[in-house]
Length: 65
Image (cartoon, rainbow, N blue to C red; front, top):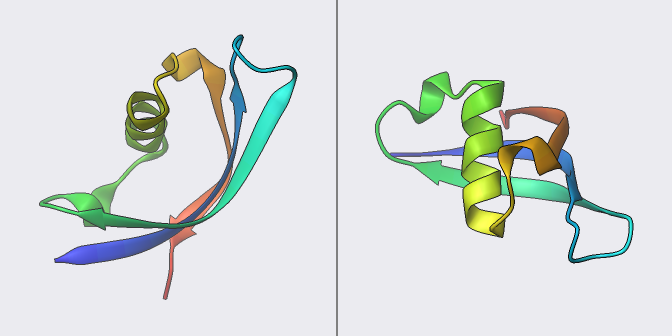
């Protein structure tokens, strides 16, 4: 089962100048995605973007209804 989430977040990446802002729908699959917490989202985004967790700043997020 998949759960769509809307997310808006900044990435502070030393390889880039300044901050990069992203926003959009993230499709989550797997068990437990309906209980995704803010820290879980930060860890997932950091891993997928190849940055440290401290470099990801989540501005807004939540399940899409």
